[in-house]
Image 1: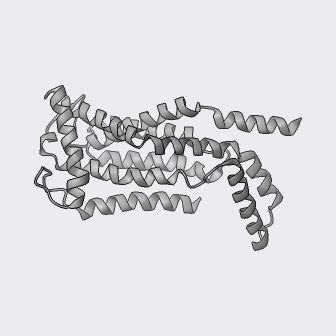
Image 2: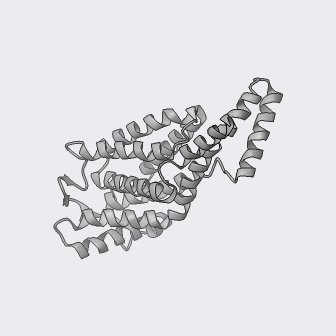
Image 3: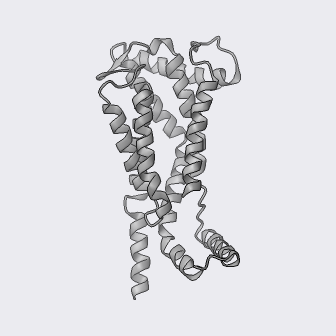
Length: 258
């Protein structure tokens, strides 16, 4: 559990450190130089402004954030589908993993090595990759950082309103941060391996962390996070169903009773 929490904390910390390493005060435009600005930040900024022009000045930039977010999610959809299916596959093998832990319950080094070998053998037989869920997270972080820069450094976004909030400032009523925390919880709950106690702490810590960050971040970035969560919730529901892991676990338990 500590290792898993440490990994997530390291990724979020790296995101914040990287944010501070770039000059967010410098406006982004077609003349911006450097690999990061030219190939990550400016293309996102250009797409946001292009879509905003289609919708008009009134709320175009807000709708542009929503649409660009969906486009980005579609772009990484194959990886996210893999992550979703991997999470559900992990749910399905939980009963067998529990049997192995019971069989190799001794804490000596030799027994624990046998347990790890049996676990790896089980994963190979079932086609489960326990690390598959990490890759989409690593890929998403640079995109989120680039999106943050596109929002902060695109001067045209400044001062624009969407619904009740200004896109370049934190939500004064904390409504969007609350929604961000709730949707993060729901998304994690749907993908969580139900019988894995190591993930239960993250289920509650991550939404709180997202809520705290969203209080201080521009609402445009929080809007990106909320829309992305809703996309993931819908994806998880329609691709694997809400109870796939539970059904498989129930089948395995029922089979044991018979």
